[in-house]
Image (cartoon, rainbow, N blue to C red; front, side, top):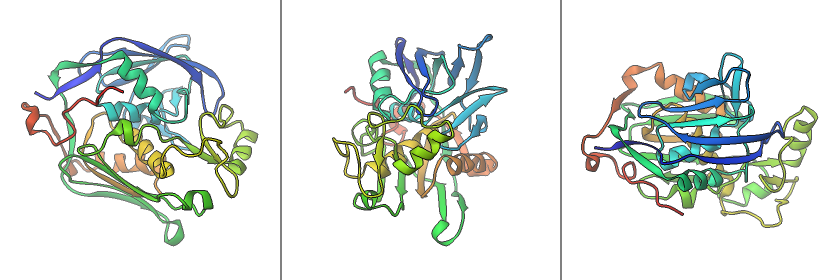
Length: 307
């Protein structure tokens, strides 16, 4: 049987929110089978559980935000990406503020935390959403066109193309394809950092955003070049971060996908719109599990290796 996964033990992290600049503590804890991934705002007078779901996403400006009533958690995508890359199904995430800490701006620190806690198999079948036909969403036309789609594929594959018209970005790889059956999430995707431009950072800070951002947790560019002294971690780090984000956004579906995602200039809003479009078309997917893990598509059965 291809089993569900949780943590063996709890693990903790402390950091600051990228946009809020607030100090925040995370405690990642094991959860029983079929719990899913649940954020808990333990700083509120009465703690509130916020289970991940495509329909729980209430804001996609600059990051993915999930909410229950007035309680929310934003910038969840990097932690969700790490959970997707390691195949975690069930997890409690206790959080002491409304924003997940940015840490180093990638998913690598979350991967390290999760692997340090250990991954445990649970005696319940892991359930997947398998694509039966193509679902696509798009916005804009011509130079403003952006789109994202899911289509049938026996495995989990993502391809992304960016178009920023910036010398520092244009000199790097513009398109990446990542296949869980062939490539390594930990090696190839997890270390890609979020990025931004100085002119945008100044505007965001004037509006009370990006208060926790800096060269230690983001790639920052002026009009011509990357300002980080150490340069890029990958020669195509920008587009790889878009893959990282997409994996996190798609994991908010609540179950892992069997299918292929492809996108051009997509972002958090379009990724969530794609998931909602999928859920609105029940004939486009089916729920499956594998009594024999050898029958599962390549890359979906093996636990990610330790560092």
